[in-house]
Image (tube, rainbow, N blue to C red):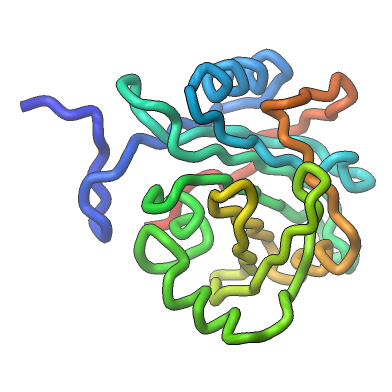
Length: 202
């Protein structure tokens, strides 16, 4: 029997993950149109305004042709906050059980689960962003391999913010505003070379 699902060695059958090989206004617009066509549209989170010197460097989505998208991802690239070369920031919005954010963050399982419970533990949020104007707390979860990861909820969906190198997480020490590109696609967005980080680790 044929199946549109992919198989992950850790999680079994998963929805396909599509990521563009390059980024442009037309490609981002096509992903936006696909997401907006669903009855329950997903946000496409992107820092806006972009951080100084940063560009949009990738976009992707999770799902098959028979059901609405289950997750979206945007990559941005620019100078590391501590002056240590280039950095990448990846933002994932996904429905529970999708697994893309956890995979990119290097976490076990399809959801942050025990990692998030341990991080929250009654503690004050480790970072905060404003997602579509709403204060959104994020908690640092165990990552590794030179990255850091923060997880929270926005619009009833998981929101992951993953940064390479790990020190790039200091970007979240400042107020970061997230725009839902499904609602508004600013013509002033700047596009750059494809990010190498939109490849789930094994």
